[in-house]
Image (spheres, rainbow, N blue to C red):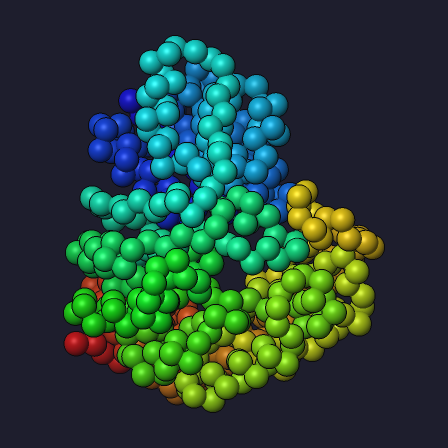
Length: 433
């Protein structure tokens, strides 16, 4: 029987889809592209914004139109927090929240055996006892880097965020299981492993004696070989001295930290329930940049949070201009029913959100250009990810610079040394040993 997947949203969702694919393969199912006809379509939904909800519904309807007789299952975050909205879609057979996502194969086989067309809903509260399953991968992901889900859940309850309701409390994967999955990825030929989660910096808070820094040290101590580790994201208050020391001293740890700031206004940070202020964030970034040459900082910033004045927005823009960040993701605020911010006023209109977003994105482009120009004549180690044309390759440096280079040799999957010339133009030097 053929099964097709479509994933919306974050890297964690993408990793979980790969896990689900392994479950289906183990049961003898055939994986096909979502654009092909299949007997089963699984849509891994996202609900972080109202746009995510709309996209999830659109993909579900597309699958129904593709094959009206197929079994259609909506799984994941939207299914967890808003199953009622999904039940209105005629032709949808299963709604499976994050609480039951890992049991999707059993749920589908039970549904097929019952020979029913009734829409069934599988959602329950997520608790600390909702464990994380170890994945026994049998094949590479359809990605150039290996992503390892080390953690799930969030308990911060930022006032704008639906994620804690969709993902439940913090649960960490056992260290031995993380090491097992990394060794699998390395055996498939991956040379960069990305540690990801919903609230990655709180890894180990539910395992006595463990935290994210100890896990990273354990990886490099236990697993030998030529590879590097990248951290997907970490909150400002969780960047410890131990983590900074790893980033400064461990050659295999990527000089790139994604540290969300969300706003440059203390008034807005307080209303967001972010628990730090602008001065704390500035001091953190400044101290790390002094200790780690050419480190790349990326961040998230939100515009249009309820009550955000022009002064508040200008404080965000000025903060971005002042900080040594090389890129930022800009998010217009989206009302999420059930969050405390949904009740705040005044709401910022969509036209103003768009204007503010554009201003920040323009600044982001300038910051990225300035960062790359600042690396003029620097020698970087690049992991070549794919071939893009005759003798043309694309790769990523440890400090998050995408590089295109030419080589007559086949260098896909290899570490190479490059020297960045004027305006970041790469000059291929040699393959690394």
